[in-house]
Length: 331
Image (tube, rainbow, N blue to C red):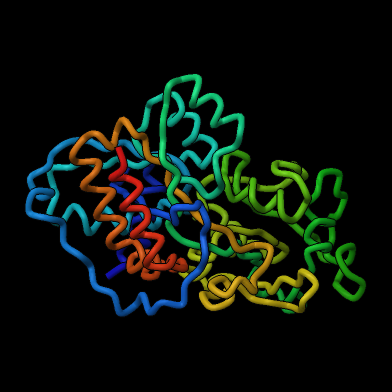
């Protein structure tokens, strides 16, 4: 069923269209702990009878990574709530926050937490919100399918390649024994939370990166670039690799404990470090006062674990979603 979510996403992104989307939750203390719960055995909970009568518009923008989950949630939600329109933008986490803190959107998809500066501006603008974690993701390091010499890179090698001031132009400059083939880089744009997270954990500071790489907020553009370039190296969310693994090669990452590939298991267990990260949505408290928004959020929290797993992410513990439901019901 959810293959249609990915196919739909590709078409919509390429035509700059908008789609429907959703949101989720985290534990009451703000922690985000992966779960070993058998989410694949869960079933989709239908909306309540009253929720089926709601009409309105819910505006969402932000992370293209979180977009996959919100689209899957919306696809199910709108089967019984066709009167609720939920257009979703993919301007990146930073771009989404800019709109959210200006009061232009109801929900902001985010692949990183809101910064202190962003939170201060939201407060100044009178925007109150709830931060909710929805799933875990693992940033994937990718090369072209024809690359036969790279199977694992250390975090130190990744920093040497990607950090500000890096002059690495050939694979032979990455590690002795690699061929002198040119290396060409692909990565998320600077408004992307994926860019912020990768640069922080690999280079030591968010947004600290060399600038001479092919950048795009649209992960499909990165997939196409890496798949068509034998000298390519790039990174993006694990779910995008899962959907396109026949076109690219996944690289293990060694942070000092051996080479580890991202997978549902290694992300779940926390073994894929430091490139495992939580995904979030931010919900305007004012928007939660509208019945269609609250119904949508409740639906997401009741079905988030199942849908996150279906589209390639790692679900949170059931208690995290339950705690989220309690948080949105607080006055």
